[in-house]
Length: 278
Ligand code: ATR
Image (cartoon, rainbow, N blue to C red):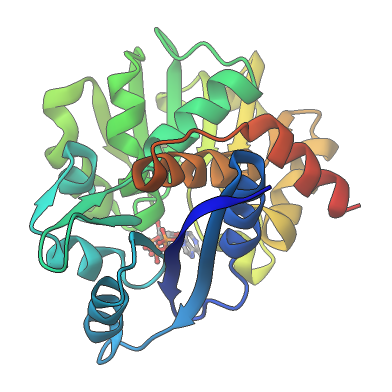
């Protein structure tokens, strides 16, 4: 039975109707016996800050932020975590009060937890390829480097964006920027992470099986429909594949813990989501 004061939360984005966060946080709340009102609120660049302020003024505990407002959210905060600062983006705001807001980026830790708990990947000493250098890649690079891999190669169509990420993270470990066409000279990899948005337009990224070690995992930060092109490609090429649904639930759990102090049982919620997807 849920008890205690109503905890007001929301996710802001555009579009946001597709977000699975209200469902996930509803499941967390039920698990933890908390009363949670978690809404999906569509905003524009003009209304974003004002809507977040409104939630804080109404006594909200915090919010999630999805594309394209993660950078704007980070800028609104009065203090931040190291991961948010490096990514210059926040997927989570915690309202200490009306005016003092903490920005965090839980995507990187969410990815790490899913790789370790969900896929039993050993990151220490691993050779990792991170494909993409947009917001999704920026949100996880720091956490990957903190896990002490041998190296992380950031490969991106626009080399400059990969180089910017390299520059912002090279104090954390061995990070190399290159174009996808140069990947064969950086291979082989133990872990190949797709952080591009290609799946949303029905395409799989380049992935040559010769770039991978025999036991390598291809991890797609996409889930649902957007994950299908790469899932199919990996099946055809007999490459071990995992989609990003576990990362989604893990990053949500870390946000939930920041707001409520309670860590939900991620495995149970993930199983429920996979079962309900058929
Ligand atoms: P997100 O927030 O999902 O990361 P983004 O910041 O727009 O979205 O980044 C999209 C990523 O997918 C980028 O790395 C982008 O490459 P560019 O930086 O060169 O644009 C990559 N991407 C998108 N479409 C692509 C395509 N057709 N071919 C190769 N890479 C693509």
